[in-house]
Image (tube, rainbow, N blue to C red; front, side, top):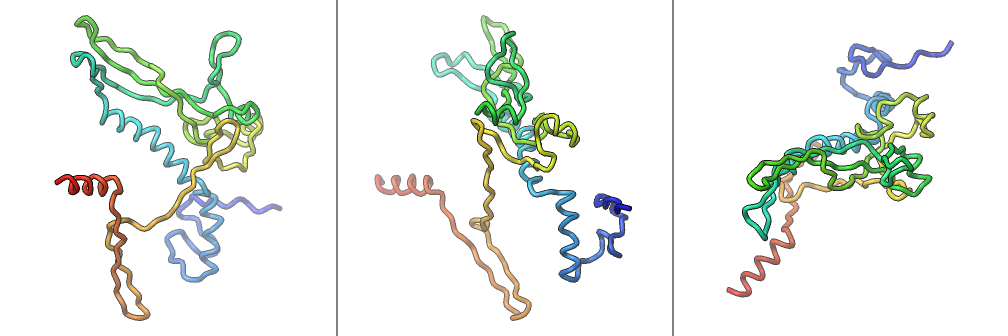
Length: 229
């Protein structure tokens, strides 16, 4: 008889005599956390969550901060961005019926295409004294991260993923650009211009350090200003 799969998401679940709230003391107990972490979080969840946050919130915040555009030729003419949305991945070219069909990552790999979705905005402007609104104006395309909430693979079962020629074990978190899989590398760096305090309990030493950083463009402008003063 096969063992039942572990339910890692249940906070009351006792695994080998330990609960999620119990302290982790030994190295052996720490290794027990590894399969639970991979089952719940995975290796690329931070990539997918970051992309989802950018598409759902950051893009709208950027548009709100720069929503009005004024013409340099006619200062009386301007238009305002009301909203921005990212659609579902579609083929960049139309089919025989003149419509753009939905596309999958597997098709993009075979056709050397980019797995991307259209970016549409709603704008408002004044013409002949009348306020005119135009919804869903396409202004560009955005590459879509696999397994994100805009991807066709999101929330699909293993059988559905297999029908789309995708491996159920593929965690996603990358892009398909011109048929090639691309990933954004994550780098860890110390915070700039922040005081970092470290405590060495064994030696009873408290140390503080700071990594100084100056914006190169700011430094250049200050230098040029001082040169001409």
